[in-house]
Structure formats: structure tokens, C-alpha cells
Image 1: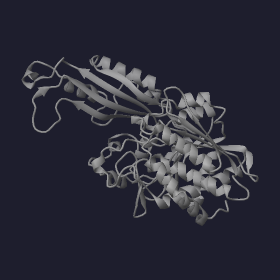
Image 2: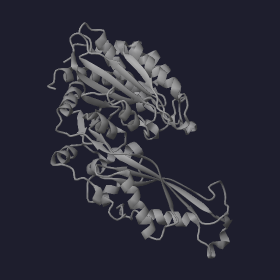
Image 3: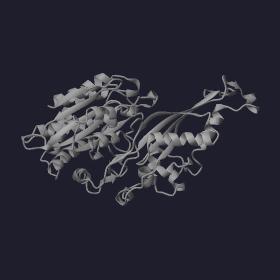
Image 4: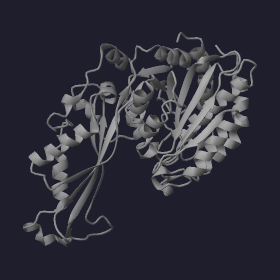
Length: 458
């Protein structure tokens, strides 16, 4: 185990806190293109000021990706390379009136650090930089080579990640990869994911007339709102089963090992209900599989937004001429966005909803690391040394989404996530935060992991 003390880790982390705060102040909202180039340059400076090499890479029409490289020290193994994936972009800060602090002014209170993007994903990048600095202060230096891939489009579906990886595959070549994040659950267990679900995100639209009409005409005229809700309802029944023909047939059956790992994932339904203030039973109460299996192995089909007609105060009696919905489909291994699109389109047409337009807005392929890869044990074991033997949970893949697929395809690396979030970090929500104690632990985990990777068999 590394000889770098927890006191030294905290000293370095505190020394770099002012730079961390400056990084959080950058309003790098990718959906709105705010301060993207400035933030990429800040990431470059972070790497260079820590003694690494850095380049800001650009492709036409894409936000920049920052490449970073730190060479193994004199006592390190220069034949091994670990790649960190992070992103510098963040979600919009809306709704502003629900924040208790200024979103882009980092604020510390009662051991928590509040800021937009602090948990997703700026703290994890800085934690990794701090771990590298801790090693560079030692006589032996870094245990292995370290590279960074830091992108600026993760929050809009990473549309150009595969383009960058295809063009710069040699530059980012590595043996293993640590992903952007992971989080502690309600029992303070760190969940480490070996994969992600993919996504196919759609916009569905219906137009039933050229103008809004007086609602008295509902006696004879159909309207877009009814057309759309009926089309949506045809896709999922009251028992929460997706009813699109062939939808479940695409699933790649999990291996026995993946099933065993998933069955060991602790899940407390009551804690989840309390955390999110759920007002209804879990939908898995009506499904033939467990919540743990649902979160890992099963796809979803979700209405993420609806818009039609009059939604202001008071009454306005109209028949809406048009309606729109956002549809979020989470994908597991075996699913491809184009195939999902084909099935949804066929379903709508065969059920009499040819007039419902369906547009694929963004998509990401699913990915799952082979759980028999030796790197899985290295990551889990190093985490247990920091968090405790019974405080680390491996999940075959998270319920969330990210652009892992391209890293597996172009770099052929095993990928696992580790990070500094906790169950109430509120990523994407108002009052996003991390606990500073978790931040220091995240740095320590990276310190121990680098040492363990060096001493493992290649």
C-alpha cells in the first residue's frame, strides 16, 4: 500500500482548494455553450501546473477534449498506463429559485461544498489531480503512466466522443480506465460500476389542426393531446410492462457471474423512498424481477416531458393543435438505438398512430466490462483498503448512462467507476454538493489504486 499519509493527501487537497473553487466558478453549461473553451483551458492548466503534458484537441462542430499525460516516476512501471475519463461540462442551473446558494459560487457549509457541477463531475477530476501531485512529491514519483480524457459534451450525450477516440486512439491508448464517478449509498457503501446503460432519447410530436380550437368542438374533433397520450399509453401497460413487440427480445442474457454480483448489491426500498420522497410503490412490485435486477439488467421506457395546450393560471378552453413529449429509453447490452427506433416506429404505425412523428435526439450505446478481468479485483480491493471491507459494492453496470462504449471499442480497456459523490449529492438538481470528507477519501482511493495497479500482473 502507498506510503503517502492521509495527512499529506489532505494538505495537498486543501492547498489546491482555491484552484478547485475557480474551476467550479466556470459556467461550463454544454447545452448552452457557456464558457466551454475557457473551461477546457482551465483543465489544461490544471494538468500542466501539476507537471503533466496537456493538449486541447478540437474537431469541427465539437466541444474540445483535453488530453493529459503524466509519465511514471523513476520507481514506477512505465509499461503500464491508466486512463482517467472525466468531463468538464455541467448541467444548466435551473430552477434558480430552488437553490440555497449561488450555483456557480462554491459555498462550504457544515462539511458540504455546494456548486453546480461539483459532484458531476468537477470534484472527481480535481481529486485525481491531487492524487497525482501527492505521488509527484515523493522520490519514487508516479507508480504508472497516467492519461486523461476530459470532454465537454457529456451532459448533452457525448455526441463526438467516438469521433475523438477514432481519430486519437493512439494518443489515448491505455491498459485500463477509471470512469468519471461513483457514489455512496444510504449505508455509506461506495458503489463501483463496471458499466453503464445506454440511452435512446426521442421527441414525439403530433399536430391535429392548423390552429387551437374552441373546446366545444371536442364534440367532433380529435386533438393532439389525446392522440399523444394514447400513443404513449400504448407503449406501457398499467403493470409497468413495456408492450412494444420484440422490445425485450433484444436483451443479452446476463452471465451467471453477473447475476451473482447483482444479487449481492444491497438495496433498501424504504431508504430509496425516503431519499426521493416517492409517493407510489416501486414499479418492480408488479414486475417479475427485483429492483436490483431492474437497475442493472433491464431496459426502461420513460416519459421525461409533456407539453400541449394551455398550462397557465386559470382556465382557457381550447383543443390543442399540437402536442410534444420527450421519451427516454435506457438500453442494456444487446440494444442498439437504431433497432429501438425501428421497433417504436413499427409499434406506433401498427397501432394506428402513423401521425405521431418520432425523432431520435441523442443516443449512447450500453457497455459492460467483463467482470473476470483482473482490473476489477484491483479496483475493488484498493477501495476496500480506503472505505472498509464491507463498504464497497460492485455492480455490473450502473442505472445511468455515459459514453463508455467508445472506450471499449477503440481502446479495448476494462472500465470501472470511482468517485466522491454521496446519495444526496443532487447531480443535475438544485443545491448540488459533495461532502468534503468524501472528497478526501476519493483522493486517497486514487493514491492506493495507482500503487495497486503498478504491483499487479499485466
